[in-house]
Length: 467
Image (cartoon, rainbow, N blue to C red; front, side):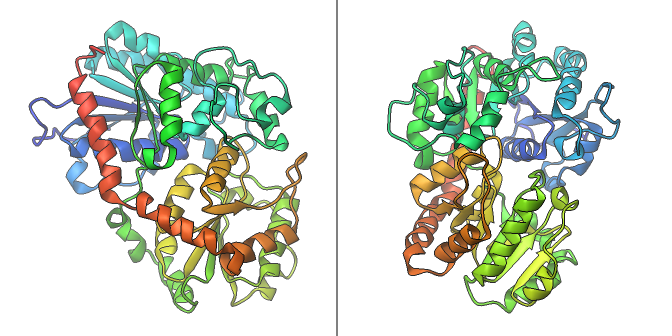
């Protein structure tokens, strides 16, 4: 669906195509970056599928004429229901089917690029086929990773074979990291990493996808800042032999989320939060795609109960098929809230009564928690969340809930002790103080906007693709 022509575009404005992977944890950062670039006077075409575009947050009125949406329909793939257009829709279906359908967008996207000839296309990890197509048209290629620089370095997305072949290889920093760090997987997390090296039902492994996407680019962008990962960003540039630019953390603007305060769901939440002491409430949320097992949910719930700390737990769609322990909600009534519908996360985290965040360590969630100075109690699950947890642990802005090294299981006692340590105990004061310190960086609009200015300047100066 197209918008009207933007009369405010600069005469020398660029046309930048944004093409994220089909997951909202990817689409939202791409949309945020689109808005920042559009605010600098450039034209954006945001590419996705009809259902995904309809579900994206509404644009601010001043940007509706700067950002156009190009809607491409996924081709049919055997085994993939027609209503699946994002990972959140998959349910029990294999994500490889969605990747296969995504790969089928190549002809239609290539046709659009041939007709529009933008200066730049910004793309994601799964787009291994895109760099050669853009090369033929003389279009600048930008690989935008929603992962942090440390995660990219650990995954080794350099377009080269990975020498690591055993589970134990991923439990230590890779050999190309020259400095001391604890950024590595636990043994139970390594199983997922090893699976990424093998071809899936789409015919291409994740390592091949991300490696070719990064190595085929002219420029790599990371959602990170030098204040947090300066040495990792420098290392990523050295390894890839091409420019790597941090775009900052892209923290959400609260003024764009003012609608939260108008949503009927907010009023009972606010009323309960208003009745709690300042900094006493633990906010608990695991994003929209973390799928807990029944034992994991049970131990988490009983751990929250055992901690005796006030909590607000936003339970998302992925946990609707499993049950809370019998009598749990009655026993914590008044002290704990279990919220099963949409929850305005930013408004909750901003509230004075909230003092901590129990999270799966998705990078977007971590950014939102730390921009308000909340220490993170970390319970990572898949992909890069374990690596994010290790980085945050090194910065002492939170702690991980102890887990069994082999199977990743945890107990109610380990949950309760972790919560009490971070939220109330004197020994946890260091985490509360460090998170407030780093919050001054995460929530500093001047610092974060400066990174966008640097990116836009780079795109403007290299917009002829003479890189």
